[in-house]
Image (cartoon, rainbow, N blue to C red; front, side, top):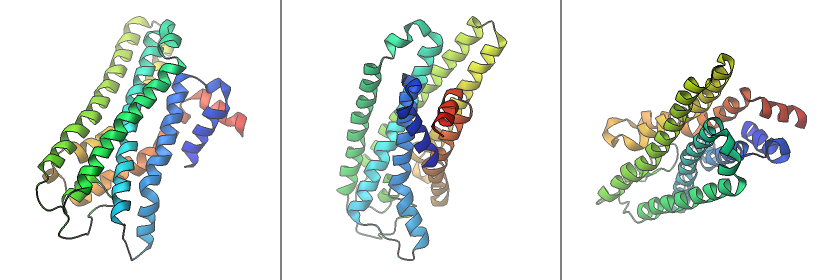
Length: 268
């Protein structure tokens, strides 16, 4: 909350950071705050309580907003990769290609797509029959542990989980990956200054580390078949992308960013 809140505050308040790059960074910080807030308060309450319960409506709401925010973050990382690609490889076209209106349109489009994508999960999961145990073997309400409690046919739900989530997650990952690969190839052949090349590669490495920290755990949980991972393993991996990644994102983006560090000093 402190790290992402600080980034969001300086991006909004400092006019020097009113650019597409920091527009997306501010969105990422806002997402990380909301993403953690959906699961962590209830999770911490359960750790401190012997009476660990959640209502059915609360569970479905948590599932819905968790997938809205998680899917938005995956697509936002792809947009941030594209932004870096245009800034480094097509600098003369950057202000035209990534103008304020385009950035807002991209962000709104992503929010609309993922809202209905998550709504599909929520509605389909809420209409399942839960006739057995009501003990969720997870640290928060998610599709996979809820499907394990359902009675009847769940093939369509599993197909949606593996195919639709897999398409969004891996599609976003490959778009991001291709953006950074193209940047590295372009800079390697076009940049003759070693210091400039090192600086650009260092920036790309820090950004891509955020991508890896987010997408690798998601791949293990949502794309691998249910039989390939244990309940304990899924819980540990869930902690990685729901708690650890939002903590590390502000550190990675600020420690290597002179503009953000300068804005933080001016605010303080």
